[in-house]
Amino acid sequence: MVELNTCYTLTQVPYITYGALEEYAMEVLRDLSRSHAPELLTAPTPVNVDCFLEYYLRLTVDVRQLCYNKKVLGMTAFNDGTVEIMGEDTGLIEQLPVTAGTVIIDASLEAKRNERRRRFTMTHEGCHGHGWSAA
Image (cartoon, rainbow, N blue to C red; front, side, top):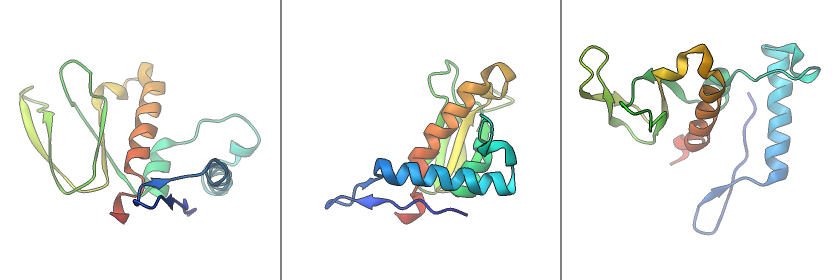
């Protein structure tokens, strides 16, 4: 496990320097190459974003239908509570109980043709969720 060191402004807003981010990315690639994908350091290979979010950022990933018009493809829960999703069987708005650190990805992104968008959305939500447990 590689920890990401976050700096804070005087008003406690977290930020990451470019140098720290670059160093973290290389450490993660080295760690992943040892445990999951040896080819990461020798050939261009997509990083397993599910593994990254769950193992490195300690986030839980859930897949649900979020809305009708696909304007919302992902969301991150910062606190325990509920979020609105579309019911699988009814298509009506339902309340989904969530815990802090849950990333919800729209089910439409599970289609093979949406793989790149899924990776982007998961990484984007992971950035929101990084550090959620420190709050």
